[in-house]
Image (cartoon, rainbow over all chains, first blue to last red; front, side):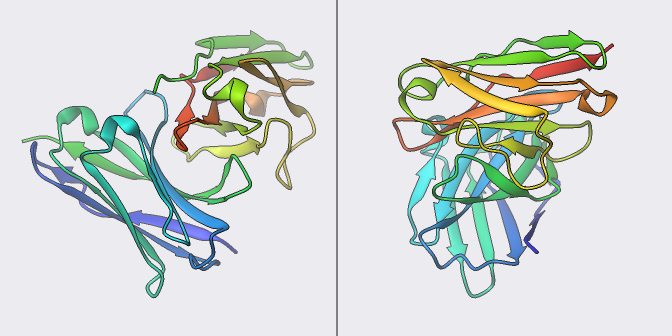
Amino acid sequence: QITLKESGPTLVAPTQTLTLTCTFSGFSLNSREVGVGWIRQPPGEALEWLALIYGDDDKRHSPSLENSLTITKDIYRNRVVLTLMNMDPVDTGTYYCAYKMRDSSGYEYWGQGHLVTVSS
Amino acid sequence: QSVLTQPASVSGSPGQSITISCTGTSSDVGGYDYVAWYQQHPGEAPRLIIYNVDYRPSGVSPRFSGSKSGNTASLTIFRLQAADDADYYCSSYTNRRTHVFGSGTKVIVL
């Protein structure tokens, strides 16, 4: 059974760096065929794709956030970490991590989501 | 990269069929058979209902059907039910090796 869960701060001050952790079980992120991505959703708004990492360390980033976003994996602790620098109130929203297979266009398993508020 | 364009809302009565469009460009929807659709109920995480244009994950009702023509993908929901009242998002792989989501469509079951 595949599960994922996001964790991290719920409140971040503007200009600070956000670090979110996705802890997963039911699979191992050591195969090029398996990936974990991050997607966020501002309150009442649409989903926004952020980043993706595969087991072979193939990384993808949203072009609009490429200079402020980092994604890494820790296969020994079954974690994927997302770092987003220079946070702004517009970055407020629910952050999801999700599992996908390389040959599939869809994220098949999702975490419950983690609400982050950016405010002073 | 721009968000894929979806209608803000689509409505239908129980038992009817509805179709949601998702318009992109040749750099995303039109260029790859890597379109997915998600259903999201309020307060919940999205749920994958279609992947690779027209494949359904295990456990998803056959009432959901996906297709694509040119730069536009479509999701059809047959025999609409009250439980289908939700937000729906499309997504696509892009020529920058990234993904992009649609603007979202609220399906209203009358």
